[in-house]
Length: 115
Image 1 (cartoon, rainbow, N blue to C red):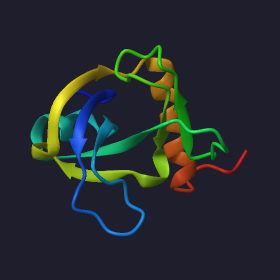
Image 2: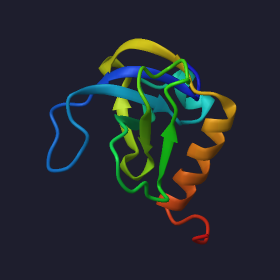
Image 3: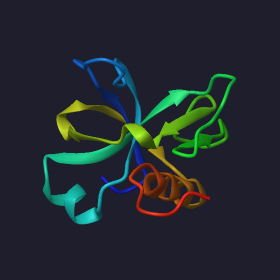
Image 4: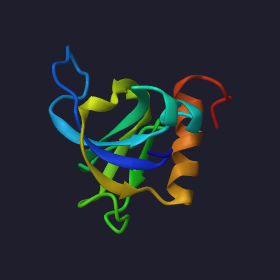
């Protein structure tokens, strides 16, 4: 498993507005963690709906091989999950989309000034 890989992930049980059900998630944790830990850090994906996209979100076009429909990476909902929650691999995100996700993660954690 590598950073940028997308897995169909089982998120339940959850509370409140946390991402629920089974959905794709992109691995964003460091490679050493991905290779040595039973827990990795992911960003959940949702299918894109019309409306506002926040600075902490990244649109992933349907042309990306790891998604079936235009999706949104919700970097404000970053989460550590056990790898046992991964149901199946879906592919990898392109380097350009991963760079956008990196910037959105920095903004969601207030590690860079707002643009």
